[in-house]
Length: 336
Image 1 (tube, helix red, strand yellow):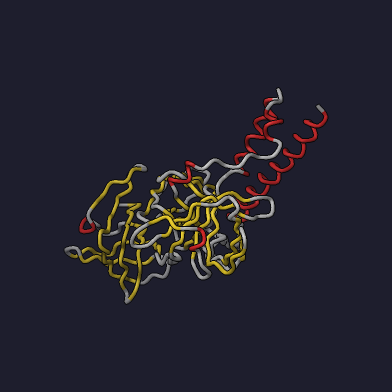
Image 2 (cartoon, one colour):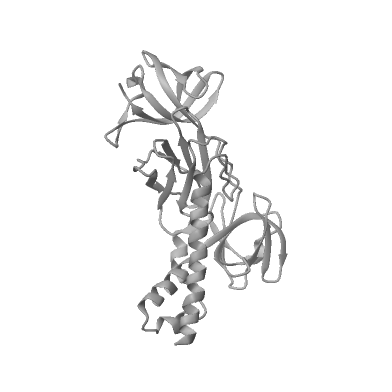
């Protein structure tokens, strides 16, 4: 009994540290004069009134479903856009600034971009990477040492604590980077952020090579210079025991821009608008397969770009250049 009591205290302390770290991340995200940088290199600008933080998922999570729930928090009263690989989303914030949105994923590497925009057009961005692998659902996570003994205990509270710890420890993760060294049962890689990570191949992971055709190859086919996604489970030394490895190409950093605009004039589909942030008047153009929505009573209805009206306030996602903004997605958030 004494042993179980001590064990419960230790686990409670670990959980306390995890919770404290989570609170610190959120407070850091929403405190003035601080930027948020994702481990993948994405970061926020220096605006204080549009801070944003993603609570779920975490950087380099491996997920087994093609639809991902993104949970976060932003300054109350701001607008939030969440972008995936195939679409952009406009979640609704509650009175505390919390939001939840389901994002569609593609197989492999996905960059999730969350952007908060205040009423002056200032933006803050957080970027993280998740890996979608339906095949990973077939892989059994490693057993946590001591779990079985503790779960046999009659202390239901202690059991729940253990289950939470196991869930955190056994959550699949990925290391992404360029292979810099290969040794027996170990691959060393350099991440896009410049960090060195170690991957154990002792568990004989399945290796898939991406290209014109996707095929299974041998572990020995991995070479120095390859960009890989190693999926598995981290141990206490931050070494990832790989269960599945994808040889692929390094993803490009998203070049999407986000702005707050107000329609000045719509002359037979030729739309000019004011960029709220800097006051410039720009011409709106549309990318291939561009979509526009009108938000009304927290519901989005698809509209035509030709139906934009004077004084429409909108958030646009796209690219800019030569006094033009090419929109991929546009959300009308206020219509007089």
